Length: 66
Image (cartoon, rainbow, N blue to C red; front, side, top):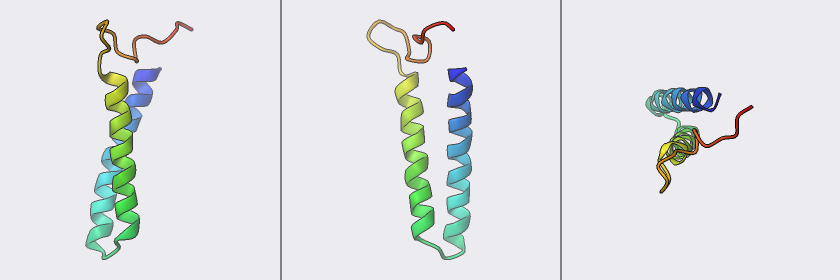
């Protein structure tokens, strides 16, 4: 389930970047900048969850079984 959420986060961040580019072209400045900040934060979260720990496991695989 966590892998699905991380995939959705990446797809959303890609959509935010493209949306911000489109809004920059229309002349807006504040909202696209905030969209880019949100995309960077989402990508950073995915990277944090995906990087392996010292033991070699990533946080995605270390969750408790349901």
